[in-house]
Length: 107
Image (cartoon, rainbow, N blue to C red; front, side, top):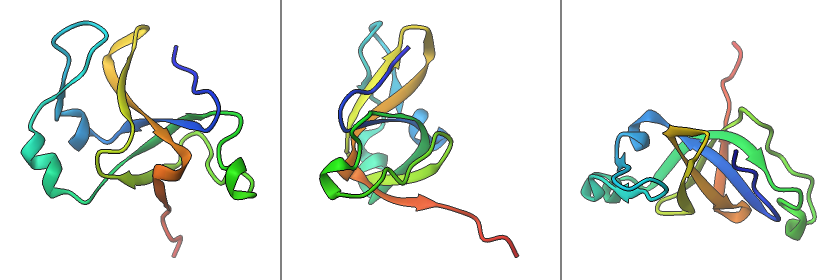
């Protein structure tokens, strides 16, 4: 289990980004097709959990909830692998790297 501390946010990247990562050595993540990732300005994923002090530096309550879809800066964060779920990759971000929350308009 991965639990972020301080101002960190754990995100499960979208499948587009997931396919770019390969795990060759247990516990380490190696970027796959870096060229494709460089052409994107941002990456997106789903919030898994937030550290207890996320967004405190901005004097605002944490706007994120588990399950929110977010956009974050290209190359932000550190890829991590949960030892309980080795087939899934995650990204551990700083709160300031999240640049938008994606919502659907109900029409």
